[in-house]
Image (cartoon, rainbow, N blue to C red; front, side, top):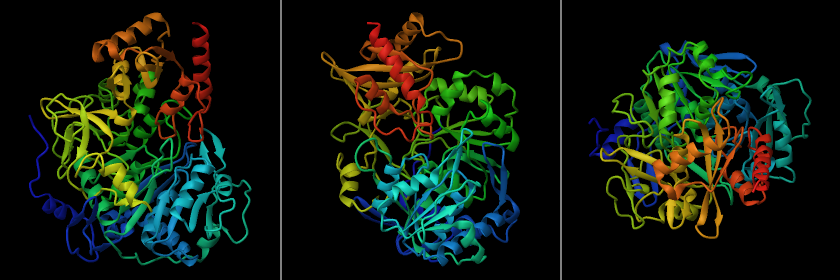
Length: 620
């Protein structure tokens, strides 16, 4: 059976990969490792904006489309590489003329408009450190991130557009900055004719300051170890962690894995559906595709507005060949059947990708058959904000045999293992903790302002190993199967059960479109399994359906995983990025306070779940 090749000279391999991106000055050493802190390519200088744009000027790519931007209302703006280069330079000039300098921290709070990518690249051009905050976060979450990063500047827009509504983004910034004395300027991009409040001296309309901008700003050389960005993880409790990524190691890594995983060609049209507010948007919407000279589609709206077939329209319209999305979105489409998909020509697709969570075998097979027409390999990627880019993934360059639901093997240069609670490797088909045993260029260089937290969270559980917090197994062929977060495991009568395992077993039932599992206190078992389910189109939420779901879970996981309660709902509470908010489901099931719901795509789903829960309890 074909496997990913093992690299014996890891440093040599990454040095070769580093030479595939442009440098101003060469590095002194490939890796300086002072566990757990790594310095990759120290002494070498480069600039991320230069690597994404300047390198294409004067080549055939100069007039190639870099980005097809489309809004949910059908508005379209194409940018060639030359046009994007021009826009980024003028944006950077305007920022520089208004005080932005190398190493300044800059918070970006923007919808998925072209200026979101342009602002990231403009900050990088100046050597400033951007921190993108997902534009659905509320004012409190935004304020926490601005304060923690000690940001001098904020870049925002007057409004965003979502589901046909205007979202008052600038107003959220104003509330977040009440009492703040450290933010020097808020740069406001006007995209509507709606009136907004401008705070004297602090707020600057970007269109006004752009009038005095120069057409060129020299890219600031920065050391490879210089932070490119800070990206805050959105934990449900506690202070968010500011994940810091370097410039040289990060760019080397994402350029390498993007090529290995997707094998983009000069005529490829690529679409990653992620928002730039997440790491997927940083790595595989902005930086890696542009470094590769790839044509990308960037879409502002949701997947089902104004019609359920919006995504398939876009694939047909732009003849997309590489499509990268989340299992959550796919499960939602599964629920609606395949009739709307069949109306569109998806024959341009060549490679499909999956990101964000474990993809169930049933979803994998549906994706392969109905979206990929049975001909497209599925590149199932496992990685994190902290890893920068893919760690486990098939490679379209050197494709292995695929197994539905498995992320296959570690990519070249990555040393991944599964260990027990004592850090000892476990045999095949034994659940354990996923660990990474060697540093890699894309790794985070720390938690902003808190090196001890970095050490404790990622390096203290197992000596000399990075611990990402996931359960996994390896099968007899060495394929990795992710089983979900170990901190989301349920302890049912002394048995540790991964939520992803139970959800996968539930989705294996034909009736189920999506499933979410939470644990609730139980006097006898310690914790009991509670299952929230959405059903496929035309399926009745009756006793027979419940029995089918229970039978599927018992068959695949045994009676210990049998749910105590099953709730049928029309929609599960999700963030705009597609993640199911299990903490909300758990709070409802346990009768606790729900907390902040500002990031939800559909806040009405919370009330529906609550009503279903109350009605079911009354029936007993």
